[in-house]
Length: 579
Ligand code: HEM
Ligand code: FES
Image (tube, rainbow, N blue to C red):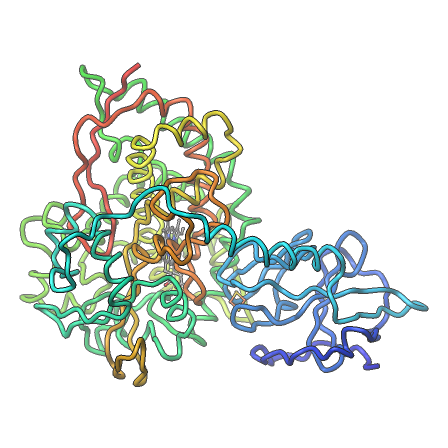
């Protein structure tokens, strides 16, 4: 039997050793069973394995100390009731079953049995009954659902060949997402080379498993080496523009651990009622006072852009008067391939003439305004703390370090853009999808408790981000082809979310779909969307509040799409109130 030891500092990334059969039978003493307050986390050693003890409802629960995502020590995280939150990227595990409640972790956490013998706490490296049952159910669940036959046909591939595909053709993306191309690629060319007119060309990965594998393997597929956008940037430009999205661990882990603290489910959930009040107010106003004489209004302007910006402003504590300005700056920053958004001369053309713009985030002069706004906001909250996420972010501390003013400014720009545009497009694309599926709307209206699974289904189908980019750091062979160090490798969530190998009947809208591990927030890697909880909460609350209105709305004319193969964006969506 081994004696429990206090957690040693500075050993975060050890790979857990396999549990031997004997260790699943033997009880290991891990220290005194003395009381500690609920929420206490303590690292001990059991048979050479790092085990974390958590105090839940006056009892000790034991589980692997090593997060199944990227091996951070959970004993450095937080314990909230029966949920342990990893300090590195915020994965959450249910300590009753070991189930992953929140990615990026994908694999369940091993949970262990505990008992007290003569005042000594003992751990045995086998699962208690509830966790063992969960393992059993997990095994049955996924294969059966994946095997179900499709009832909705995918896009027609008739006459289509790989030679027809050009993912850089923005005319195509402006019309619709080319799901037929993506389906053909998944089937026939899971690793595809896409030449570019104004770039070096890039590799295209379209299968779910490849997307997750690339997201996970940040050492081979770097976000930092060339940034995450498709543009070919010099190292100087990458460095000058980079936010945490364009950093690799370990520097990324430090920043992420700091900002995680503002976006844990515990923090985000406290905003549910305020989010509900905002959504309710915006919907009521749009339906009651915005329609013109024909009963029409623009959904994007009146609802989809309003909800995320008001929610963001509320939780960050921004002054009401600044909100419209921030929407406009965010639009200009992200619509940089769309002349309608940034003016007749689009930003890519501008940068050819003014190369200094390439040193700015999104190559956009508007980014400076946003960084400066964020910097001042952070400064104000440091001086005068309030009950908002901005204050939590500037006060967060990991190993004695905090976000400095510039880091907060750059992070603010990422939040304004990553948080608002994405949710807005989901709410627009989601509405179009719901209007096209009256049966699913009726199902949701009959059982509003489906709002949570419906939110994930809306997020899967109405993915606002088509793809991200990584850069290979070494030569690798993938699907029999050679990817060379320095090559651009793109991962297409727009495709993985419809992968027949991972989703039963993928082209069917199913508001009760479970499981539904979609890729819309990325998955498996250190960059898994920081705002995933907030976004899902917003979409769920919007759906719940939308139920009474859904059957009163129809499309007045086709939507106008953003001219982009990065964002699945809707610029205008004229709708008509019919009753
Ligand atoms: C429907 C809404 C949203 C979608 C689909 C979405 C999607 C994504 C995706 C695909 C990534 C990159 C994942 C990866 O590379 O593995 C990401 C990262 C990120 N998202 Fe979101 N996002 C949404 C909403 C939000 C919101 C509301 C916020 C914040 C308030 C937010 C903040 C961020 C940040 C900060 C990152 C970078 C994280 C990192 O580098 O560690 N997002 N998001
Ligand atoms: S290491 Fe735990 S969430 Fe990433």
